[in-house]
Length: 368
Image 1 (tube, rainbow, N blue to C red):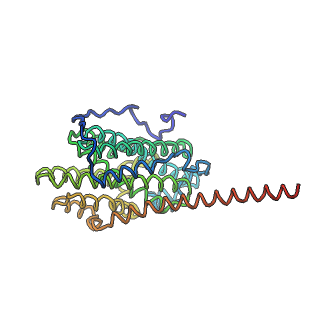
Image 2 (tube, rainbow, N blue to C red):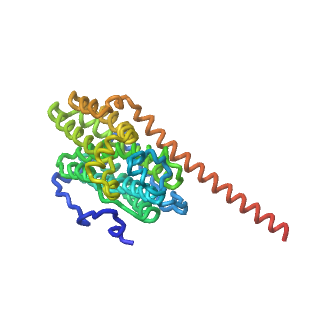
Image 3 (spheres, one colour):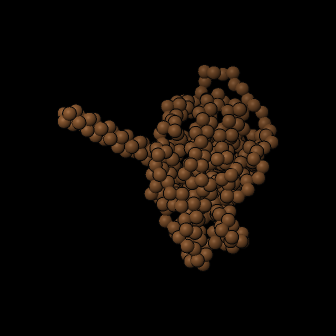
């Protein structure tokens, strides 16, 4: 079924065009590169995988409870609207929320693919071009997987959120070659990683857990790439240039924070926008969710050298300043381990099935 027929709201024009400026840069030095970045490029090549094969698409998904997370996480839970809902209504609400969340993941992955391709084009260093080429393939795979999950397992999509679209547009329109790194690798991917992790660690459904765990294994490398490249480059910038990038980060963080309210879902259930926004602001779960979402962004921003007073104050105002002390390397290592553990469990189960089949065949042969 065409995607347009599955949108819960009118997505508008099917093609979004972002006018771009900036230079395409070639490097004629083919035998030089940073060892850390070339090692990451090698890892990017080694870790390529096929979403058709690695993920068990035969797993069933209940579209009216796709994630199996507690109802307390829904913004309407405990309100007068929730009290009036039938069980079918609540199932529809769960479906819409899951569709909205994974639709934003899908749109973000397409944005990441375009930004990675832009980095290949504009970054001056060949080692960074090499790695960005592997990332472009990763993001294409992620978009393919999220799109398949939404089409086949949920049967509904939501248009791109206004705030996500705004940040993508700002990132792509900027002519400076480091801005796709900053907008995508640090802000959008950092926040996506935290959102993926929250759902991965709370869902009781095996298929979305597989998808999120395997995507996060790739994204951990992408954020590491952004940290390496920007940390090196920002050491060379003037105070004025650093302040410009800090202003971009501040604006982007507010956009990302406000992107997560899910007001579009509540509007689809007949709740006026002002009331929907009020419910989202009062939601204790959403407040905690927002705070944890910055666990990946704040330490990364601090690590790459953007930590001026205005930026620090913005994080204080958002209530996420203390996230700057999060151990980003430990979080990334855990992402790798969880994906590898899922692989090991699945391969062990498949091996047990093969052994059982062989034993049954031997027994049948002896009996015959």
